Length: 157
Image 1: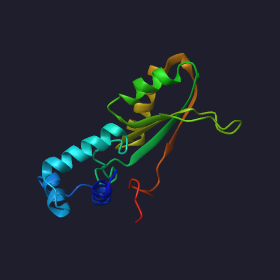
Image 2: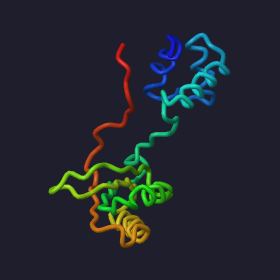
Image 3: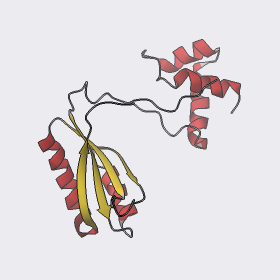
Image 4: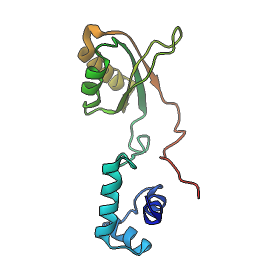
């Protein structure tokens, strides 16, 4: 990464400009062409410097009040394959594997669901449970009570 890449990351770390042509706005502010901005962003994506460019919605503002992290105790031999399937479900915003913290925390698969009601969130959890089948030994839903953080990494200069 060179100084322009760092400037581009710094300019986008709070989000893309909310304009019809955000890459053009970035280009103008950084003294680049829109093509250069897009090429640099693509290069950082391909190299893994940035993982993705996407929308980070405020689920509460959109009416999704039952935001639940579903947690699952899934057989270790099947958790990767099943987690891939769970992560592709339309109602799962993110899904990942984490190590268990026994004896208090037996869960190794996490899948965030956003719903308008606890009943809808439970229906989503039931659909995940059906997908996991006998590979799942235990599950729970941890509901959000408030929004604590809604930002990505920040570079301090």
